[in-house]
Amino acid sequence: MKIPLLVDTDPGIDDALALVLALRSPQCSVESITTVAGNVSVERCTLNMFRILDVLKPERLPVVSRGADKPLARSLVSAPHVHGDDGLGNLAELKAADGSLRYPRPRLTLSPLDGPDLILDTIGRFPGELVLVALGPLTNLALALQRDARRMALLRRLVIMGGAVGVPGNVTPVAEFNFYVDPEAAAQVLASGLPIELVPLDITRNAILPRSVLQKRLAVCPDPVSRFVADMTQRGFEFAEEIGEGGITLHDPVALGIALDPSLTHFEPVHVAVECEGVLTRGMSVADLRMIAAGRKAPATCRVARGLRADTFLDLFLDRLCPASW
Ligand code: RIB
Ligand code: CA
Figure 1: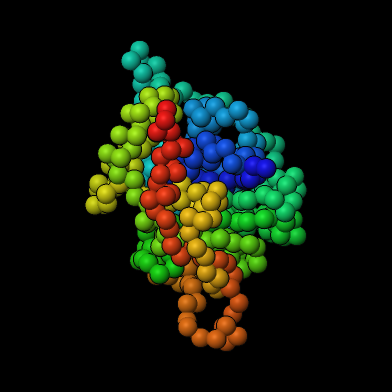
Figure 2: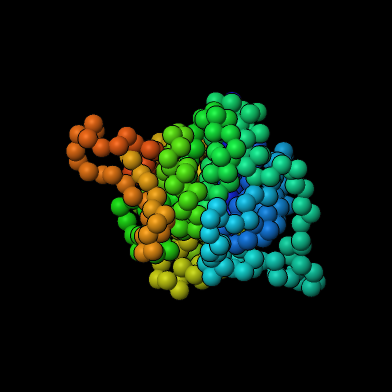
């Protein structure tokens, strides 16, 4: 049976790559997608979601809901400098040879449910089976927990891209972007007792996609998806060069990959909480890694991914993007 997935996302270049991976993986069925304000506004994230679906043309369209337009208790901090003003590398401006828009504005077919309610509804359709993959700030999940925690407890797995356990943050010295944007939501979700698999920067920073590797693979299959990926990642590679990195860091595709194949990593139960009071430490994921008797510290709040079979993951990602046998 296919793994039923719900993806909560703030597309975002790496989110879009994760969605290509999900929508082209036969072992899963993307049942629902909820958007959330993060990399860019939720309006732009939602528009981007339909741009992605217009290009990928999945056999069965997932149900899509627009989610939270701002964090629980703070104003939105977004990342257009990383993902482009439109969130997808400014591909909305690209023109074809005849002067028409290469990616015209898509028609939005939205669920009448908002993001948190679509999460709860989808869990109700797949009780005990649904795998929820959270790729943005956790606002929708926190709101769904506030509305019906008993329903949320029917999740089979909750795979979260977020946090930085033993490495520096990527927004501040201590905070990763998704937890920084909505620390209150992250704190509520981490304290919920849900079956959380946390995929932090410690892991995702090992999955770097060099421009040359992507270009070589995309040249093998010159289809509209390859053109879209090439167009959309241009800004991502420019940003990587600006900060001296060797390519795009595949944060969200790694989390999605682990949802599809947990053997890509190994997990350790850890008590992780999220700092909401600090000025310097806002959004910090505080992990209790003390080597003391389990009975002397608080019980684990999640399972933290502690390693990545990076080559195996990259092979999986590139093969879904563009099968070598194309
Ligand atoms: O810190 C990386 C995360 O923040 C990724 O999910 C990226 O898309 C941004 O949302
Ligand atoms: Ca994201």
